[in-house]
Amino acid sequence: MTYKGIIFDLNGTMLLDSHLHEIAWFEIAKALREKPLTIEEFQINGHGRTNAAIIAYLCGTPPDQVTIDDIIERKEGLYREMCLQSKANFKLADGVAEFLNQVKELNIARTIATGSYIKNVNFYFDHLNLGSWFNMKDIVFDDGLFPGKPEPFPYLRAAEQLGLHPKECVVFEDSYSGITSAIKAEIGRIITVEPELDASKVKAIGKVYKMVNGFNGLLLQEIIN
Image (cartoon, rainbow, N blue to C red; front, side):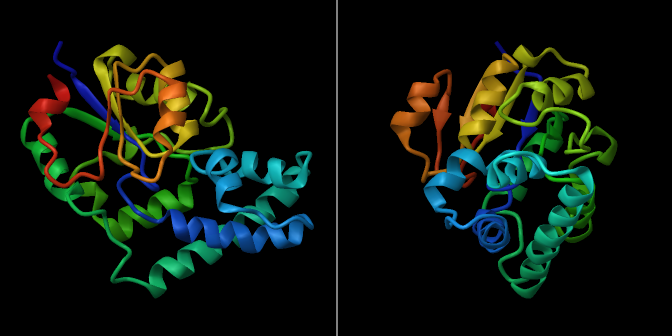
């Protein structure tokens, strides 16, 4: 089977910014609970999930919407400030641009399904040249109206945006919640690009076609055929 579309997760997949999100959430967590937030805990209950879901987890119960919005703005403000302070490192991961060029040259349908909200998506388009490869109207982001990863909606919506059945799509992911989301959406082929994921946990989730260490050297024909 030849896959007709590719859906990319963004944070931690094409943009290696997980550590910045962790730092920002660790800082926010100090004000929301007494117990420090750990990296291991955040890998399971944070990465890939929407801001509202992370806040509900940290608080124990979901706060009111005004409080959620305030926490999101504080956290994302910290995150974007750190991105701009380290411009040399605020860039697409090695090999991503080259791989996206292959995808574009073969006119493969493509989009992004991210747990980021619109301010960050606009921020990425402004600073990472995403418009060279993606159409903004096709991007699936957290608008607060749908359940995020690990639920299947983000990838179901992304496939719909491409006019494809999920089974016709390849997904690139870096988180356990994202992998679960793609499996629930019945995505045809799932590839993980995060070398720090526990291979045994990934295997336990199941249905991952391949685990790779980033995008360097990836050949498009091997991915879609």
